[in-house]
Image (tube, rainbow, N blue to C red; front, side):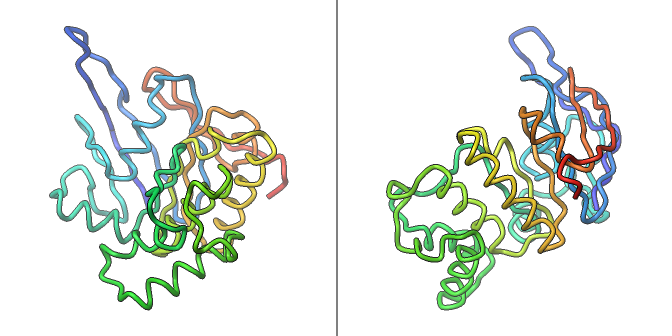
Length: 230
């Protein structure tokens, strides 16, 4: 699925050079569930952006099914993201003037899916995350947890191979955090996704089969015995 070799990302901060990623080597197999943890500024979100083709490395290669995302044209990269990768973020990124169903449908527009089929698939996706009765609600009419469920439905409606989540519970309280993590883990199993999540929450990290810790742009990997036994 993913093969990262020597991935480096450098930024300039005034006269200073910052190494957000410092030669990352990482393999993620199809169907893996990996959590990325580490201190603020350690490179977690930067690594996730590389996996999603949202940013390019300064050096190194990011292979997804043998295709190097680092060398693709912007047009081809957009196509790969639209077809193969679903994203869930801490801020739900819903369009406030669109209903839950319409927000989910937006993920299918770039794929050329016809209107009737978009509506059907969006309704099914919302049903799968427990929001079958909220299709016509605007984001302002939904709780934070419900808005994140809409965002998850939007990520999954296009049937991606990969689901990338960047602090998906960061804006939620503890009880809602557990609900959303349970939902994501259930969908990972149901759909056979490759699932990578960035989190600062150790309780979430302990649940994952694999844990990557990033500090100062360098990665350490370990296998977990998940607390839930999955």
